[in-house]
Each structure stands twice: as C-alpha cells, then as structure tokens.
Image (cartoon, rainbow, N blue to C red; front, side, top):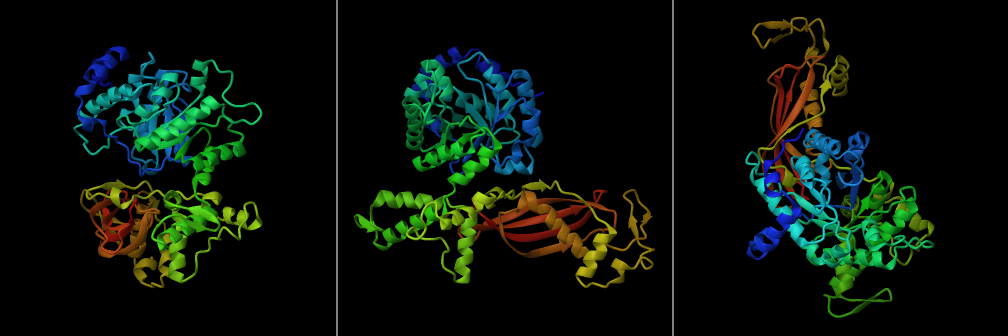
Length: 538
C-alpha cells in the first residue's frame, strides 16, 4: 500500500473551498510559480492510455514503445481503490527499470471538480510518476491549486531533491467552459502539453454524434476544439497532442487522421492500441521526399541570404516557408542523421530523391517510404545520454551470466591464446580460491581468460548505460582483476559515473568516464575497468 500523505487531507478538505482560497490569493502569487515544469525537448509523439487496474496491460505497457504512458484511474477503472493500489505497485516496481528511462509515465486522475477522491489518485502516483493528466479542467486556477499542492508535497521529499517537478497534461476541451478558457489553461503552471477530447463535451452539449456519418470527419464544433487546442498550445509554448481515434481496428483511418494532425502542426497523438503507437511514430517521421524538399528550401534561402521572396521549383517562398522547412529537418530521425554522416564520410551524395523525379504513389516513392527505418522497424534505444550521466550515478545492471567451460575454451581458441592455465585440466588441479571466512577452496578448474571477463563486463553494462547513446569507446585508463573467475561462477555488474566533460570539438557530444565493476556469486570483485566513452547529447 502506498503512503498516505496527510497534507492532502489537510489542504484539500473540499475542492470548492480550496478553489475559493486560490481565487482570493491569485493576485499575491509570485510570478515564478507560474513557470512551466515542462521539458519541451522530450518527445511526446504517442501518449498511450493503459487501464490502471488491468494487470495484463500494466505488465506489457513498457514494451509498447510509447513516448508517454498514461495510467488511467478515471473512466477505464471499475474499482478505484484497487486501481490506485495497482498503479502504485506498478510505479514502485518499475521506477528503476531500464525501460522507464525512455518512457514518461503519467497518471490520469479523476476530475478535480468531482467527488471521486482525485487526491487519492495523486497519492498513488506521486512517488514514481513523472506527472499527471488532468481531465475536465476548466480554469487555470485549478492548475494553480494543483501546483501549490504538488510543490508542498515535493518540498517534503528531503531525501531526494534531484527529482524533477511533476508535469501536468490537461485535457482542455471536455466542457464548454474549458473550451472558452483553453488559452489560459495552456499557460498554467507545470503544463508540458495540452490535448483535447470531444466525448465528454458532446454529452454536455447534447450532441448526437461527434463525426459526420458519411465522411467520418469531426463535426464543425469539435473541429473547432481541435484547432483551439493547437493554437493555444503553440501560443503558450507547450506541446499540442491530438485526440484519440476510437476505432482501434481501422489502422488506415488512424493514419489518415494522424497525417492530417502532423500537417497541421500537432506534436503527438493520444493512442489506445499498440498498433496506433507504431503508426503515429511512422507518420510523424518526415519522409525522404519531405526532407529533400525542406533541404532545398533551406539551402536556397540561405544561399540568397533570405532577402525578399524567391522562387523554388515554380513556387514562391519567403521567411515562413524557410522556418517551416527548418522544423521539418529538425524532426528527422536519428537513422537519417547516421546515414547522412556516413554519406559525407564516404563522399557519396545524399541519396534522398528530389521532388521533381519522385511522384507521390509511384514505385520510387513507395520504395523510399518502405526503406525509411521508421516505417519498417522503429529503433528503440535504452542507454543514457550525456546529460543523464551525472558523476556519482550508480547503475546496477539487470543482466547476469553463469560462465561455462565452453565459454572459456571457445574464447581462448577464438583469440589464439594457447596458455595452459586456460585449457589444461591436469595443470589446474591445484587451483584454489580463498573463502570469505578464511581458508582455501579446492577449485581444480582452469582459470577463465581475463579478456573474456572484461568483454563480458562491458557487455552487461550496455543496456542501461550506453545502448544506442554511445558514439565511441575512447579507451581504458585502468583494468584490474582482483579475483580469478572459474567455470560455473555467476557474474553480475554495476557501473559508476566518475566524471564527464563537454567535447571540445563536438558540441553535440560529451566525454564520460565510467567505472564498470563485475562481482561473482560471493560478492567478490573479479574485474574493475575504468574507461572513457564519447556519448551523444539529447
């Protein structure tokens, strides 16, 4: 069970009373408290809902690949108490897992204006979630009240001052009042993004449906909500997340709606099914054709030094087109960047086709889209970036390995090392190891090749430390083997960040000093390696 925070019951006896207090104090608040806690550099292409009381979905949600997971304690939960307990247990069990490193986890609470004990929802998610999704928010004052509550709770966490402030993601169009206040809501404290929904709004309006029967397009009043969400988010400098697409079996319909949201300028979309997650990532990635056209605009504009309007392939362009093209290039995937760097080093030209020889829907265009990595199989990187590798950080790795005699023989032969101490059982009969309580243990087995131990140690450290985020291993400054390794030993590993510094020649990368330590089943250190790695920045 999660810890009950007494502060919640003291500060929020009833929402109505507290809201009146905030309205009275509004003019006295320091301006700094209105600052957003949002890190807009974080991708929120997919914001994926998971029922908070469903063990099956909870156990699989981190494998979906969504940028943001929303543990739902509102509509999808039948038993609220059970849901809160399961959400708290899930957050406690996973907050240190490697999957969480690339996944933002939010908890959708019940409406602040309801009697559904939304404060209990905040309790259940406070020690583990990155923030909260706020449904049916109607005014900025509700967010100010939540900001004060969360600030006081965070202030009591004296044991860990390095935890970033909780973010808020309001659903800002679920009541008529909310739609009219959406610009203010988007500017609320801690807001990292806003999204929109129309099902609750349609119930309040008395609408018979939300979409046109023939075309499937949103009715005009709900289209207005979508437009206002986008405009309010961009005006406030936060991310705009498009609403849900309910028909989870209609992948084509979802992709069409996602493509339209991308063209409009939305940063992401709410998702209900794993297939929708991969689809929105695929759609939001710029195609080769889009990148080619954007580069042409940027190159032409900068070559002409941006003086006045100019013509590119029969189209007039000016500064807004240049800015839009720059944003398209900024959205390109890591895979495209790697391919470009590889092409530059090899002297080959950019393989992306120009717009005049690749017609939409043609065989060439289909080939380009099908070979785009984001379409075929999106990459998932688990390692930490330079900014995350702070000196003093200690990472315990989840991989362990029981080494066998076959490992030793294979590695020794593979490296052409005929040393008898690794291969000769007769010679090894006298091998012993010290016992922790004193005395010697007669092992009688060949010693493991120490280079194997080093390689295994570095390999076990990769998933949580450097997977997909390392550029190069710059070298080892120290390698020690304090204890021998024998066949049958079980090894585990941890990594300690010793130091880091900016790269003088590569502004997008930095150099990190890592110390990897391997232990056997008795907790004895069998290998300690200190190395320098060139790491990517976010």
